[in-house]
Image (cartoon, rainbow, N blue to C red; front, side, top):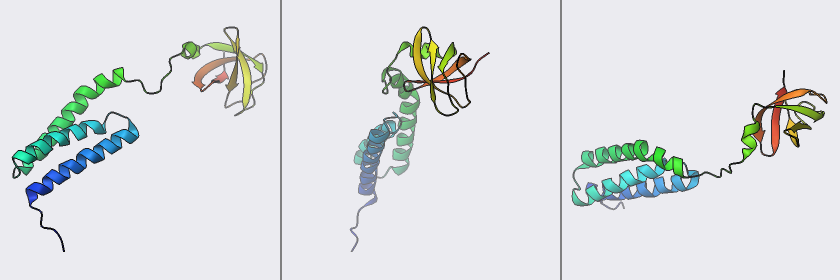
Length: 149
């Protein structure tokens, strides 16, 4: 019932499967991690085509190439590939002090004024009008604040 496949051909199929699987994982995560294992499997596939019996060499080459590419090229590519980041000057608001202009109930929305502009704000504590608040983070278009000094 089972097809008899020689070990050399089996390794070719395994490396091809690793290439496809790593490619699918990379396409779904877009993290620039799995792609290097796909490249390592490609090099091992080439070796397996010419030297079918050298299984240990194929595995060692796969691991070495994958790890070297991962450690060497991933950081370089991460610098130049932008992941849905839209740079604004809003991040400069973090750490600044604002004034609450509409009370902020704990866990709900209110409003603060910072640099002459009104922002929607949320906090884990109740904050009254005219209270000084510190901007901790930006969550979408809302400022995350806490009572300031």
